[in-house]
Image 1 (cartoon, protein in one colour):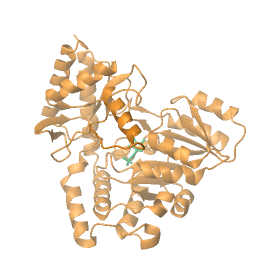
Image 2: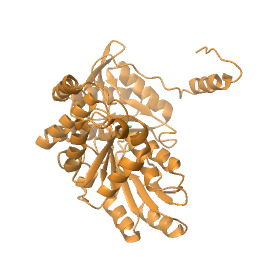
Image 3: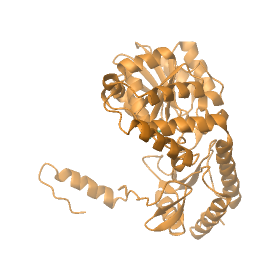
Length: 397
Ligand SMILES: *Cc1c(COP(=O)(O)O)cnc(C)c1O
């Protein structure tokens, strides 16, 4: 790419060039169809294993209708930030319904899961305080921690003994917070939340979990990780997103009422950035309705994931140690992972290669995101393609 640059912006063009040359430049595929189990890219139909649309709600007729009805009644935009322009009745309903769905005291919504983390962490801790953070936590947690100016102490991934040790070693602090992802999206493993809770409780430390990949996936009818481990009332604050299993967009913070009320006063993305749009809010309300009334989609998701895992393992693939519908197809070498993804694409399957720095060096993989939107025919066809590519590249016999 030839950019028009001058002396002060030349360095950006150089950086972009370096990314291009090292194969790390992010090319974003353009999707020409609705989201779903099959999508169209470059005029070609592909079976889709890239979306976090776990339940196929991103293009669900009931969510579409709810959004249309709400637009007819309330329009589209929220007007301004809620603390200044007031809040639409749908925002209020959604927060009440989400709190009740998740079995939490109260809930507040944000524009996204990312902003929910940026709002919550700096509202709970600041300079002179300390955060104990799982080494593999999501980027939005890391940024929220940095923004808070608290001291960040990383503990080894899912290692409760190391967490204990780090807490013992840290003697200078004001307030303390433990924060962890619920489901880790690169490996599909689940945080040992009951044990982390015991530690937090023993030391009197605030506990926060980010349930972005557990929402709509874990727990009864997709109520999330707190429900999965039956820890209701024990986790101080839970972050979530409506951009994954809920199929829309928006952030969730659920938990103790005192924290939720505090975020309405001190959560900066709440005070200084406008709310979710009307159609988004209405569609999310419909998603809650749908989940509360039936576990069918959650069951379909798990059944699809179980079938994919079993068949891939039978074929001889290393699929890591996922406990969720995420399948990391472990390939090791990043070039091999990229080649694998490219060959899949040429054969009608869309699954992304992931390498360093998103995962450790030598642990590159193709990540297979299962959803309830895949039909049996989609899965059978895709499995055939995985086997074909796996054999061609010498990954399996
Ligand atoms: C995806 C994700 C987010 C961001 O959610 P958005 O709503 O897309 O901003 C935050 N935390 C975790 C753990 C995630 O996986």
